[in-house]
Image 1 (tube, rainbow, N blue to C red):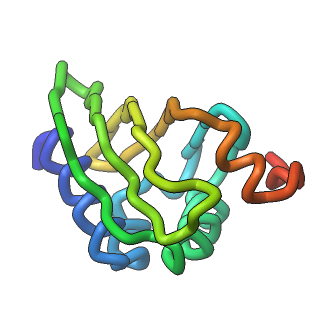
Image 2 (cartoon, rainbow, N blue to C red; image 1 turned 180 degrees about the horizontal axis):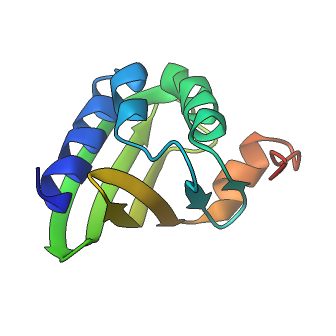
Length: 125
């Protein structure tokens, strides 16, 4: 699969709440997720966090997906049932190596997530 196809499948799996399948598309070693208010250094931690978000996920709308070699860029609308968050527009950069997503870098309005978590952000450790 091409990097763009791998990321599209990952997004589809997260949208469909198939997190075990989504996890298989993430690199086992050297994986890193960086967002405005949290960082995960392994895929298990990221998927565990995503599992917690499933309960409030109403929809995940892919607005744009483009690729330049191993770099893939996505614009998504994350729609929630949680009133304090509402809907969040995400810009996400992925780097794919050896048919696995190696890095995920997300940009969004972090204030809504921080408010939801009561200022208690997940540890990077």
